[in-house]
Image (cartoon, rainbow, N blue to C red; front, side, top):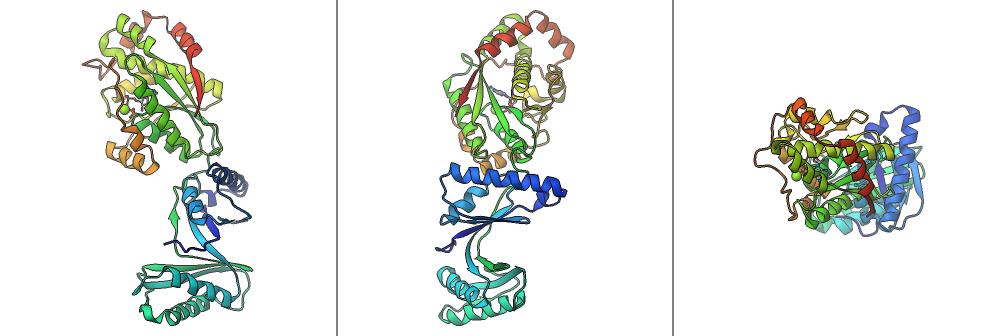
Length: 394
Ligand code: ATP
Ligand code: MG
């Protein structure tokens, strides 16, 4: 129920940013402002002045509703409201407030007026609530409105800041977190399935830009699998306007072929993942990333028992492996995937990997896996794989 003439957006970013020490808070605010501007440019939103205040930005724009919507997808933003700016003169606040009610209140609405105020004025916040409430009732008598302070259907909020005031009745919730770039970069193993994009998103929410890596298992998968992975990367990048939108595509089918020829079949998935980790570690080094993110969670697949995860971890030693979904139920991951916009893409039809054995090892032992790898020139495989790796810009 956005009023037609909104000309501003109030962007709030209290939460965790607000409780940081002075220096960090300023640095995060600056980063957040940069990310907001990049997001608006990315979506070709025209905007004017941006006023910075503690815990808030006020953005001047004729595209207020769209701006508020897009900004709920910027990490660090806790909420955004399309608003009408007026001066802080009481008559003007009342005039605009009545207009807002006239344009947006259906008959019989139970409403409340709330006011927050900083600066010196001839009136109190209570005066604003009372006067505006009365005037709305009076001006829209025929609609049979009611003031209801406890359970209003619509709240007219008045936010007064010195000489300026903002009126709004709608607040869109953001995801909070830290502005992207507040923490170092990570590389993300992105398969295109439901889990890995969510895992990447969760670390992005904590401020880490993610460079995705996709392992192309052709001929055990095909172009539908690759296409799906690239599309999920694009969906994820909707949360990273102004950051490089690149993905590493690693040809991995040849490695799988070698495992199948030379190693016990039951270990195929573990050998495959260990090779992925090793390659990812090298890419992380090149990208100056601080670690690897994966979508694994305890017991979610045969390959994801704690014993197996331990064997996977042993493949790398320079780079920690982060698993934000470790304790998630599938439904929790699915719900989040829907919320962040990756789910629809992730469930598209794609060929699943045909190298997966009928009976994959669920409790692999490191010594067996290392014995299997003794038959291979692992270092050479890593090197050759990296040479064939491509970087795509999406
Ligand atoms: P997802 O839903 O993310 O595909 P999954 O539950 O199917 O995960 P696995 O196939 O065992 O689980 O993979 C575990 C993790 O390994 C994935 O979450 C992802 O991070 C990584 N991974 C698996 N396959 C690939 C791939 N082809 N390219 C990049 N990363 C991959
Ligand atoms: Mg999957």
